[in-house]
Image 1 (cartoon, one colour):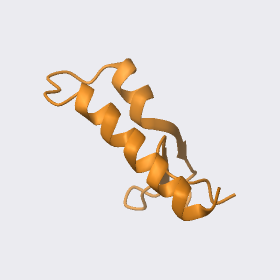
Image 2 (cartoon, helix red, strand yellow):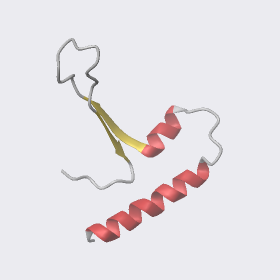
Image 3 (tube, one colour):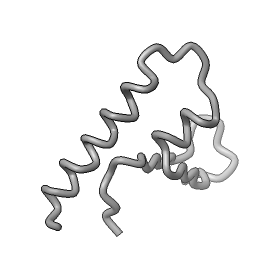
Length: 67
């Protein structure tokens, strides 16, 4: 299966899952697991900085892994 076919598959899966949760009133662990595969939070680039934010990478369940 090529990358374009995988993207199409993931988009269709996402749409099917999204239809189940059209009117989300409360974010639950079940909903998070349906859409988010992994969340990576990295250390600040500038240690002890109050203005330098942390880098956050969110991997969705419907996105291709670039690794």
